[in-house]
Length: 306
View (cartoon, rainbow, N blue to C red):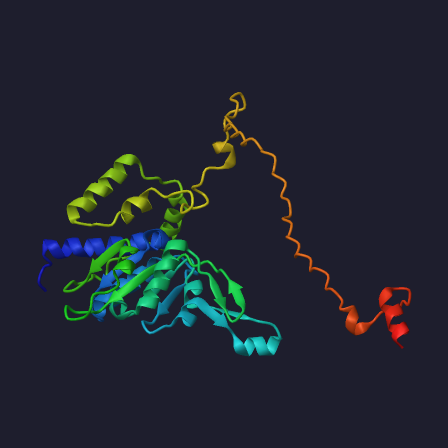
């Protein structure tokens, strides 16, 4: 058997370390983009990862042709008809909460599936609104994207690659099966101590400089190393007592902005409509109609003639 070259030893050591790191913090790292053809090398690395995970850690396989309903979940029609109430069936992403999701043929994944996976990795939850049912199940998982593509295949989703903190290329590499993986108890202890670890300014600067030297244009590594209060774990957030000032120090309050002076509202008068002009009285022609009063001259003249 030929001895492995120093380059192969370095790549194999990096692959073993990547499996151990992903087992400790799957959602924090985002996942790994694993470029390797289907074969014993890739299966050996996946078996090493599965053996390092603590007990009851879910591992969910996601096919490349899975649609949005299968990823997010949908209403279980049979259970709904049997129980008489809507029953929601969890999708593949919700089942992978706290564990690993393996995406087969990641180089052929559709744009809609890549967008759903990217949003789930960013938020750690998914919002489902389907068939009149609303749910928001958590889905904090690490994604293992299995890339079996060649140089002739189209480029995989750059947005999905950016969200995965590790990238491995196992092409032409031999994995030593006899090397023992990380113990699940050691991984569980490392997870318990993970919340007390914080990256200092020197480490963040080193990450930025390394990304600049390697030609990495994204700043995701620096943002993951310095989490904001919205993205950090609940155990890492400062408590309310830690944020409050000491008792002897008065709290500084922001001065209230004076309101603008109020002006009297002008009284609105209803405009008067112009009256229509009066019509002049119409003159009556008494020579045609006659007069009913005989005292008038016209009546007397008529009576004398008769």
